[in-house]
Image (tube, rainbow, N blue to C red):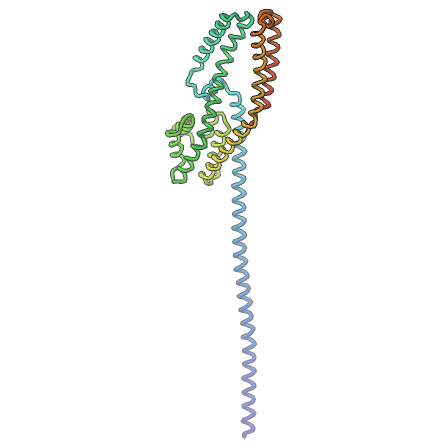
Length: 337
């Protein structure tokens, strides 16, 4: 009886151990499956995160490429427009030159003044005893040469004044934009407060807005009345910023710094070329000084150059050769910055 109970107990114990082993095997297998599923889920999650990161990076690169291409296209288009405008304005008509010089004068009145100046110079040359062949030259110089030289001189002087004040105007616009004012208010501030001729040029931008033009289009037209590369730079910066976006104050600040660096470079080039200019002035003035000294010492020796036809011919040929030499020296000393 006791032996039978021990056998049953052992059998029950072995059956329990077998059931526990089977259950443990299934439990371990289930836990391993859950671990694998968890690892797979983490792998999928990381893969999705990596894909989103890669996609975001790819989108940023694509957007940067699109923006770069847009800026390049805008620059190319603006460069073509600027070249076409420069071809038209490189040798503009007299009416545009007078406008660029700041002359509020009708073209008809300018022609009248030129004719009067030619007649007056011819009369003065006649009173001074100039040869008859020289009188037409005096009329041409008084009617065509001197008036156009005056216009060119006033034009260059106005451009110089503009370049001296233009970087300061850009700095004012930068400070206005940084303080929260729109670009339009900054331009109006310059149009009301800046010295001439900057005030007039920005006032034309304001007037162009009142006629329906946008600020970029009105700024691009500044180079028509102010023939310098700096005015074209300002229009290009405003045009690019309106099309591609970006920090306007930073762009205008960089432009102001570039204009000041160009001004310093021009001053440096001018200082380095002063020796050559002084030499050219001395060489150009030397024939006149020698002729005057010879006239003071022996007038009869040099007067045949002015009283005979052969002397006049020699003076004409000498003047032509001297003009060619002065023109060559001027080209050698002028540098575009």
